[in-house]
Image (cartoon, rainbow, N blue to C red):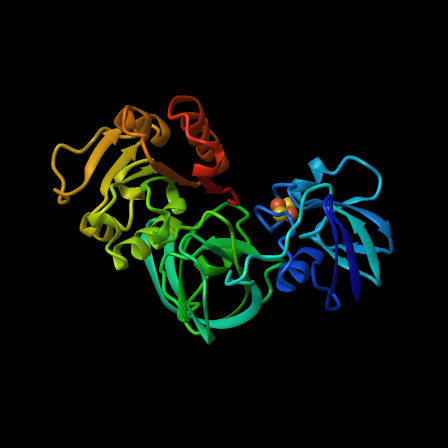
Length: 338
Ligand code: FES
């Protein structure tokens, strides 16, 4: 199906397969259409239909609250029923040369393991190697579970043969219910990615500040892996703040303790333990954005910040970074898709 997109600055044309979301088809064609969550919650991919018809696969998507005018729809949730012409009220550009263009792929679930009482990790062994940037995410779909869910990769490598993920158990979690609901070793998953602009490249040349709540630490692990492989911390500082409720919710502590970054675990609902087995880690009581705010006062020169986690935690951290740290928006990178 031919799709014509009239953006604020220019027009684009691309083809979509039957049933494929307009957003995924455009991204696959190398057109950087607006999106954030890619899974129906944020409303960023809103477009207006000028001609043609779309099928909406999730009419109750939370992002629909941003769809107010006649003809508007979410590109990530709608597929073309025939040729379409649509309008996007933002500037749209082709993806930059050399950028990792998202594609559909499939793989096999391996190394399923419990990381905390409600968090599991697993690797998706890919049929073909894929490139992605540190800090990106992918959409995953399991057979029998409606729609995709977004998860950040924890690892980093070029031509990756496997993608590592962390999944937190959520009420009505769909994919997380599936993962926690039985032995999934060897199961096949469909994936689409890589996605997301909260990426890190060692050419950045800035100190790094990572603020993560819960499973949001996944993308930070990818950024740390990329930085450490490039010996980035011999020239630049890094601070990581990892927010969890209690010690029993924490994971990846062994890997974080080995990092050259200064890592603080923020415990929101428990006092700092008087004894623990992690001499290289700091522990503070409080919400992660408050702990980061106290520890980072006066240290924001030449800093790029990355934020991930539940949307309220991400919003609170962004407020600190804008109002206290006075970082420019270009130096605050986040993905908000949980
Ligand atoms: Fe479509 Fe978030 S990108 S609702």
